[in-house]
Image 1 (spheres, rainbow, N blue to C red):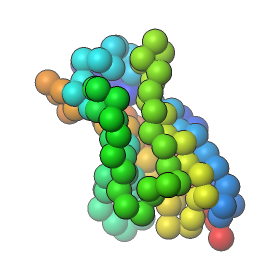
Image 2: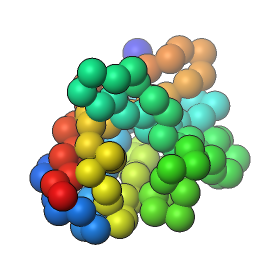
Image 3: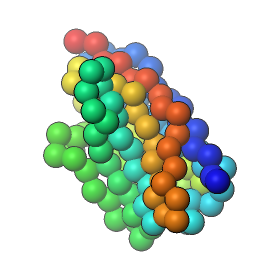
Length: 114
C-alpha cells in the first residue's frame, strides 16, 4: 500500500498563502486521481480539489480562483497552493488517492486567523 504524507500546514492570517504537499511512497500514476479534502472542527470531511491522471483538475466552488492543485510526477508529489485564505478555510487537510485502493494521509492542520 502506498503511503501519503502531507506537509505545509500552519497558522496564517486571512489573505495569506500556504502550499500543502502530499508525498507518495510510490508512483502517483498508479492512481486514477488524487485530491485534497478538509475537515473543520465539528464538521464532516469535505472535498476540496482533485487532479486526474490526465492532468485535468476540479475544485469545490468556494475555493475556485484561490486554490490550485498540481503535481510533480518525478517527485510523486501533489500540491495544493492556497491563496487569499479565509478563516473558513481552517481545518485539517487530507490528501487522498483513488485507484485500485483508496488511500489517505494523516492530515495537516491549516489555521487561518481573522
